[in-house]
Image (tube, rainbow, N blue to C red; front, side, top):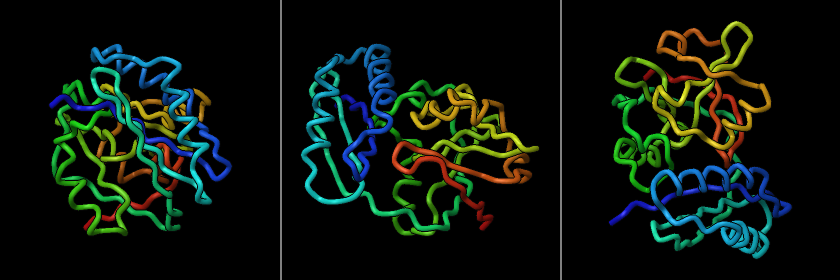
Length: 210
């Protein structure tokens, strides 16, 4: 069975979709790069209809899945608030930076299977972050990672092996962060660590060693 493309989208309490243009741009790029049928303006219409049809208060998670033939379906769920203290741990496995599908968000993510199965039983840990085969910092299983070093924010380049997240793109384009190869030593030396994803924005975490 062919993997589906995924966009996990925030619908805020006012039924707005703050990063919609970036989601659509990434999805169109992924479709064209991987040979999936791109639905054009109909994709945006589907998302907006689903967003405006939500009838429970508060923010929601909207998950759009796109098959190779362009067929789509949408799942929605309420988005609970994020607890104030969030922790991360280092994943025991390494990512292979040359894996092409790391750069696309699809339902085929075998390198994260153990983490995805482990996280629900450890609710105090938001994510596990990965190094690649060269010892470079990559990303979390559901987040991009950022380090503040000497007053500036850095995030790993895509070539280290990470998904070009839409919140990451927003932070890069607005000049809040820059790309730089980061190491485990940088992770330990960082003045602050943050994660980002489209649902949760850009938020501070602490590294738990054990």
